Length: 143
Image 1 (spheres, rainbow, N blue to C red):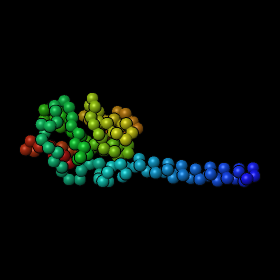
Image 2: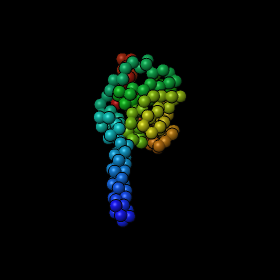
Image 3: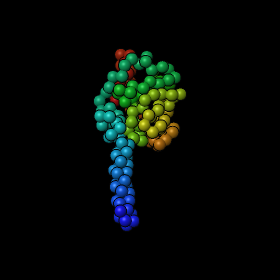
Image 4: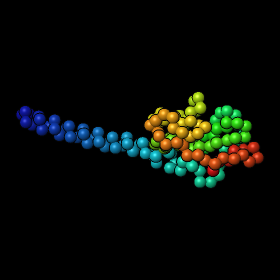
């Protein structure tokens, strides 16, 4: 193989690698979209009322994550509940746990204050949407 053929071959291989990288990078960016990571594509806030369970499951001065319903509920004082979407405002992943009063997003590490919904660590900058919540017959109803 001549030097010019070798150089041409390297150019073609570099071009193929660049195309593969661009395609792979596009797939990685797609994975950060809200539709992809939000699971079923369901909205961040329930369209209809959702029963979460016994109000007593949410400790006074604490919070509980209802991951399957994509909601987090806090209780600052007895009988005083606040609910927020548990779907991260950065990429739509559902929070996976509460650590020291902060909801954790497992995808990119965003953290949210579960009593206010405010983003306290990025990459998310928008707060979690608030969801109306009430107690009926000892059960929490959100939405």
